[in-house]
Length: 151
Figure 1 (cartoon, rainbow, N blue to C red):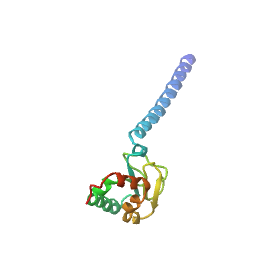
Figure 2 (figure 1 turned 90 degrees about the horizontal axis):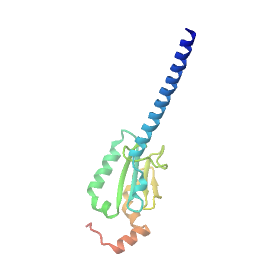
Figure 3 (figure 1 turned 45 degrees about the vertical axis):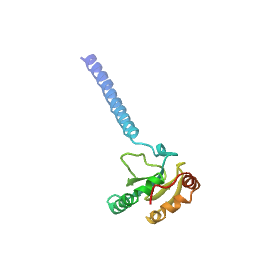
Figure 4 (figure 1 turned 90 degrees about the vertical axis):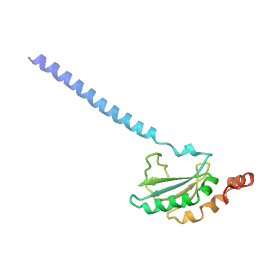
């Protein structure tokens, strides 16, 4: 009778440890799948400039006004290879959060090389975004070799 109980408890302890291991393994594996699904902003290196906008949840006025600006000036955004990516409360369901956005709200202009060229805590950056980009050496080269398609 004692031998049976001892084997039973040993088996039960083994199964419990295995169960805990499997839970931890699946949690780890699951979090890696979530991270793997999100794209890195480095995918845009040397292809696009980025305007990263990090705003507080619920403050959709900023997002809506920027989206209207993009629609109104789509040609200028395309001509400058400028993509806009929004992070609501430092998060984006499609992209990994870059280190400069972590726990910070604001506007970042990121160059082809992935470096932050300009940062502002308010939307004032938007007013001069095209002239700022147009003053960059690589943009000057682009403008001299390609004619703008925008009127």
